[in-house]
Image 1 (cartoon, rainbow, N blue to C red):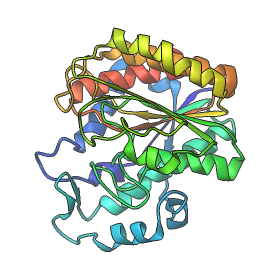
Image 2: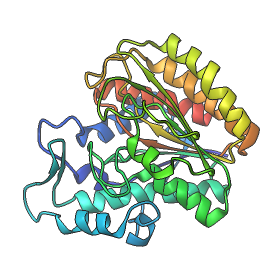
Image 3: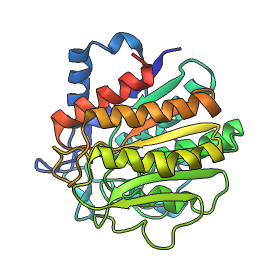
Image 4: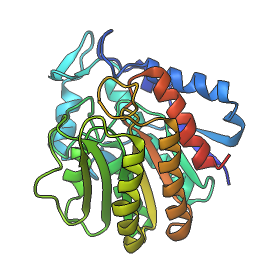
Length: 307
């Protein structure tokens, strides 16, 4: 079976100002690199629908949903915090980003694709059940993971987060929930300054210092992540695919390169084949150097599609 690739033009219309690093050009750069790498023929392109408020409510409170909906501006920007703004297209873009994950789960579970990558924005892993923050409005991946449990009866879900920033929103949604195991590494200290103290038993957080390189990360994954994943035996794997731990990305200070993302993805694919019938849904999170981001996404997709 092929690999799914899910996106929507609405995700490009959301923007937070001309100098904001989480910019529409991120998705355009990925599309351009897909053409240059000639892997489009190996992907099944799917369109992201608008998620419903009921689907958002799988993770987020009704109060949070209504707050985000209520501050939509007709013109200009509405500020949630110093990093997070809405324009008139943000609401629909956020619903498409959530919808992409839901369509990806359906396509994987219905055996239309073996796995899928959601090329979406705004990102999601900082969005907590009751709070938007860190460029994120709704937690795209957490909603998709909960949807897999609720709709398809999946009992064991593994979440892999290799963004340079800790996925505080995903942890907040699933800490101490026996259906979920979350494995992450992230630069510490760095925004959102969480994930180090009082870790829940189902959270495998690996805080690492600035300038940690790919070889060190590979060793930590082999020593810590993989044994926990094999013990957990996930039935479905979700990836918060942030590529801002790349050495060319200025929002972090880590030292990963494309080959490290390829290696990480290969390990996840092997676990998925062993325990989860190959089922993986990956959702774009960070990655703000356009060249490094697009090259890393292609490396990630090549391993998902095994080409």
